[in-house]
Each structure stands twice: as structure tokens, then as C-alpha cells.
Image (cartoon, rainbow, N blue to C red; front, side):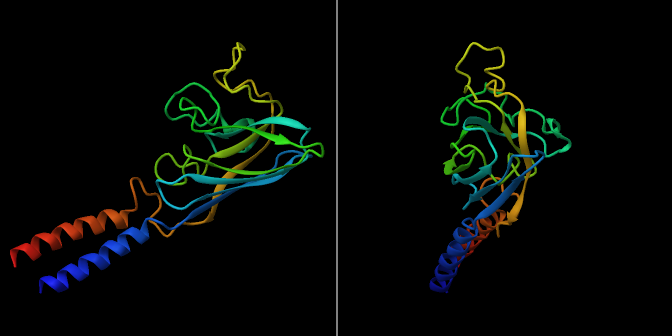
Length: 207
């Protein structure tokens, strides 16, 4: 009997682990501009892994442009309706690599001489899961370079003094995760499995 219980516990553990490793994908289609267009895609394998970001934009002026997640997915008044940078921790504005930064601080994208951006990287601060998910918020591309909070300009620690908003798009679900959405600390399946494992362990020792 105990052997069967042990086998069942192992199988359940494997299922619980697998449930927490289904990728979620999201996309923002950039618009609200006569010249600037593009797509930004996000992929996250599980709650506790980095988000992989792929960026493709055309129509920009060559050089650096501020690139952020803004707090609202509201385009009713154009890009201005998206509010400020997504900043649930009320921190100062910073670079993507900084530990002290807005969640939405993704630094700059760099357009080549044709005005095109084609790049990708991973970010460990944003997430597609839980109460801090960027799903339903907005991506905004700015007219000027984000100074990353490094200058004496009065807006440096708030917005990076990145200028006007050239293009924006709501971040929507591209491929839903197989994990219950949203998950907070691992999937709900994993939490349920942990409880079941505890109950089974108690029963097995009683018999």
C-alpha cells in the first residue's frame, strides 16, 4: 500500500511541476501614429522566470527613443490616456538594469538609419502573471531619448525626460498560459498539489 502511495505522490509532484512551466505570451500592436508602427511580443515560461521581449518598429527617427510600459490600457484619448509609467512600488525612474526603477522602465530602443528597430532581450522585473501583470497595460514609444534618471532635468527621475509619445499599443494576451490566470506564487495547480501531497503523506504514515 505504501509503495502505491509513494508512486502516486511522485506522479502528482511531476504534474504539479509541469503545470508551473507553461509559457504565457502577449503582444502590443503599436499605432496612433501616421508614421510609426510595430509589434512588441512578450513570452514568459512561468511565474518566476524572466520575460523575453521581441521588438519590431518602423518609422522612427534614427537614434534612441524612450520605451516604457505605462499604467493604463486606455487609448481613448490617444497615447496620453495611458497615464504614467507602470510603477506599483512608487520608486524613482531608472534604467532597465537598475534595481531601483519603475516596473515599466524598459530604457530605450535604438532605431537605425532607416528608422527601424529590431531587437530582443529578457527582463526580470515585468511579469505576465499575477496582480503585477503588464497584461492590459500599454507600451509607449517616445520621441526622445530616455535619460534613465541620470540628469538634473526636473523630469529625469519621473519620466526620463523622454519627450512626447509617438506610438502606443495595449498589451493583450497572444497565447494564454495553461496555468490558471493569473497565478501569484506559482500556479494554483501547484498549490493544490502541495496540499494533496501533504494529506497523502499523513495518510500513508497512519497506515
